[in-house]
Image 1: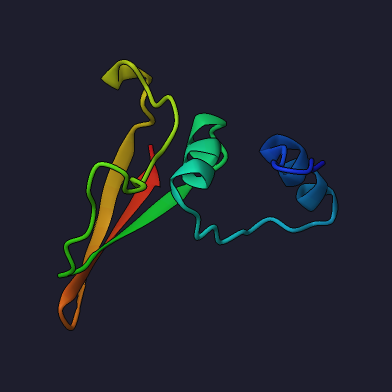
Image 2: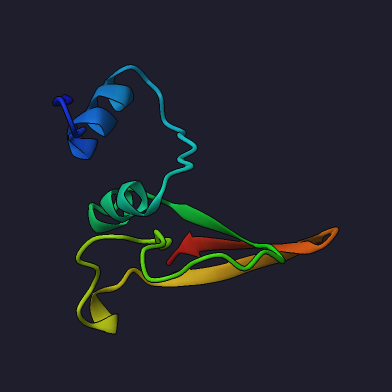
Length: 96
């Protein structure tokens, strides 16, 4: 299921499903996020927008990796809610 430097996400999810674990919260970085999106292993995405500006040419983005070369290949998402919590927003998307 896992190697020295990586985890087979599909194998992990199959193993969890066999153990009757059907809900998983993933708080990943760009590489982990891309693995779940690329393998279509998600139902919803929560994006938090905060008043902090970080980044730069070496910053990790929300999705790292190859990405989709065409918009039509990207998963279709529906914005369900926008929640304001103090000084930030939480956007809740579900897969269509």
